[in-house]
Length: 389
Image (cartoon, rainbow, N blue to C red; front, side, top):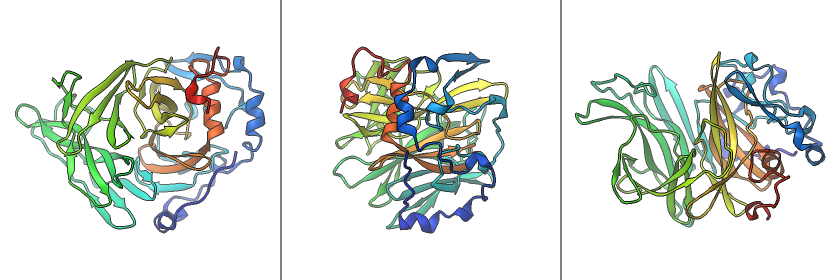
């Protein structure tokens, strides 16, 4: 597997090795185990991938010599650390190309959003070829009770979306707002903001309408919305399980109307939630989600590719093997972009730093073909046309 190492000159100015502590651990040293990846995948046996339970965490037992190394789950599980350790934010055989101090940041075609936390306040710093900007402040509401997902510290978890032929790029991100009947409850909401060709106003997505146009009740904690575009229309995957619930976004008034709520037609793992944006791939759309499970050490996050049809009702028709991007308990994929050879994945590590790696089309395909639960398993009776070209 050949991994790309090219970064734009803009990124080189902003991102240097000096931003991160020098890695002195074998956990992040480049390895040569990927050189025979394709021949190894061809010899992979179906029965070498039984799924089993270890405690309360769904794990995957794999043939270590025959799988891409980033798929192999760290073992033993209890060796994973929850404290910040930059040397554990990658995987052997998967060289990190970009490292940033900043939690769950995002990179999209030269546009960078760095999410930072300092002195009790979160900010998002935007860096583009035409401008740079920063925004974010604490939100203080009279009623802060019963709120488990936010402390009002400011914006975070940026993601990007670029509708075709418009020349416009939007950023989705989480931020706080004082809402409720009295406007006194601390809530977490998703915001939409134009970031290319210029910085526009922040639009709070605070109105959900069902397929009949009736208003839906929103949760106090709204997050993990995964954006994508079809043509010039903006959409978000609001939930992935048990149904793929998709809303079309109105970028002017913040209204989101449900356009699809189809049953997820694959054995996706419990706890699969939105992660990156989705991009076009093989006549379909592909994105990276995160899978949350729980261990004695706390939350344990894995990443997973999923595929859905690029037309209504946007059926999810395939999931990959779950994999780890890091050797930490918490990882969070934020941005997925296409390259000539495959994909670049930008992800956060332990809610502290952000990194980017590249994976090839062949490696991603192997994750689908070797997942016994996937609709696209290589032993399936027929190959779905979405993956045949």
